[in-house]
Figure 1 (tube, rainbow, N blue to C red):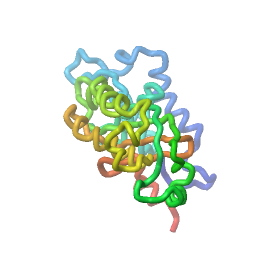
Figure 2: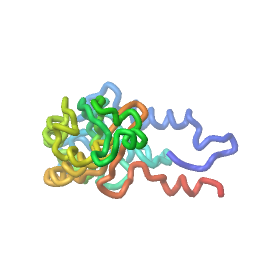
Figure 3: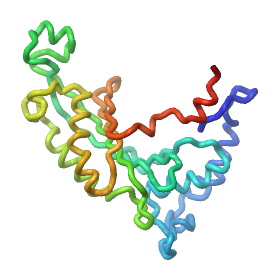
Figure 4: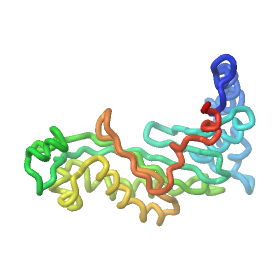
Length: 244
């Protein structure tokens, strides 16, 4: 949500926000069979849509936007699967999270050990080190009016497993992945390579790759956008509210 501060130093009264969410969303959906909860999910009607994560977040937006100045919504189906909606009539963003374990060494072959350590620090030590990488793959596309999906979720998961997890998991990236024999496997370069591998296959299943986020450690992550960033853009309404 976004807006100017009122005389009490708040954008909105939190109690009123909670009341709107409870009356319009959670009070109607909690412990309910979603297919029967809202008429939009009645697939016996021509306009009915299955209650996928993407379709649910769009309907939550439709119910909350008359009451709250929302700029973005995120709905988690589980910790590794969520959808974002920004108010576009059809488009939504779907993110899946996966992980792999790999070792790497950050060093350029034409540089001395001393020079590499000056650039990469301890990450340049000769025998390498490992990480448990988290990968978030975000795709964008129109929500299919009947299936309620941006794309075939199973197909997307297979692509990520086949093109990222399988070739990278339990490897020494510099030695086992040909691309990194010539390219230093920094978090940034790994994320770029993942985006390059996924972009065309994701297009083939009917969506567009929006972003790859690679979490290397608790305090280090890299993000690569395959198209103009949207999810992290500052809403124009918020920019207008900032005093100059």
